[in-house]
Amino acid sequence: MQINPARRPPVTRPRRFERSRIMLSSALRLLSLAAIVLVTTSGCFLVPGSRLSNCHSRCCELTEKTQALESELANLDAHNRKMATELGQTEQELATLDTQLRAAEDRLANYESERSRFYRRFGRGKATLPRGIGDQLAKLAERYPSLHYDPTSGISKLDTDVLFDEAQAELAGDARQMLAEFATILRSPEAQDLRLMIAGHTDDRRISGGDTRDVYPNNWHLSAARALAVADYLRVHGIDSSRMGVAGFASHQPIAANSTPGNRQKNRRVEVFLVAPDVPVVGWTETLSTVYR
Image (cartoon, rainbow, N blue to C red; front, top):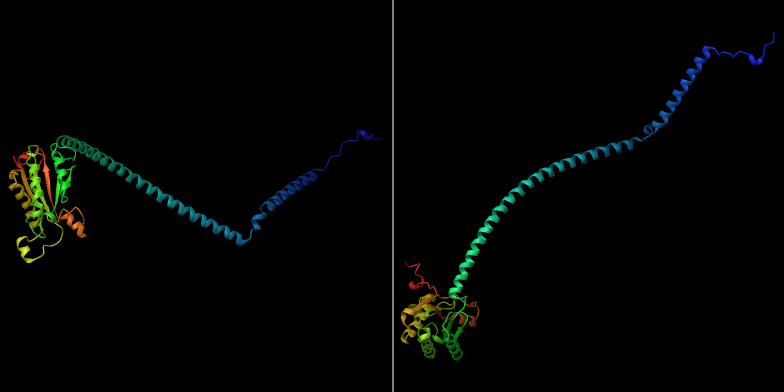
């Protein structure tokens, strides 16, 4: 019987062969996967030991730095908290100082108000001499160089080297005429209410000569004696004693450094302060009635 090739039945493979094929295919896949893993991980196994050691050291170094930075950060945080506390305390102190400043400003405003009232009453550091008296004193000073008149303050300064001989408290003859004319001005009706404070001054030189020191032991005695001599002369020439006061300051109120003969001459002086009747003067009870109640 002839079989038609077109109708030949399919050849069936044995089951044992099919199982082997599957196993082989699985083995190939496993081998391929192993190869891939081997290739992928081969870099790790190929790293030199020295490089691995360096990496380990570097890792330890970075770990230590990290710990140090964390410690520093903790310290900074503690410092920040401390600064915040100090800032709070400082703000409290500033608030206290601000309160004190406002109180001081209030006191200053009160002082300035009192000073303004004082200046309105007595004048802002200017002489309160009657009209004409200042002009007469200025003209007198022009004729007598030993007399220095300050129109701003009303102070007349007399050079003691012209008024007195060295280490003496007796008026020299050349000074008497000038003081006589000075007294004439102060006796004028415009000056009747003015008071006179006469202050004596010396330089810083020690009183020399045993006989002189017996009379004037030190510059206190000499400065007071010279001021008293001027007051006595003015009294003799018509100035009432109740209008005058006398003080001696020795060498303790210089107007120039006692470093040269010229400066020492400036410091040897007698000053006559002309004081208005409403200006308080220490020692005059009628001008400081609140003190002598």
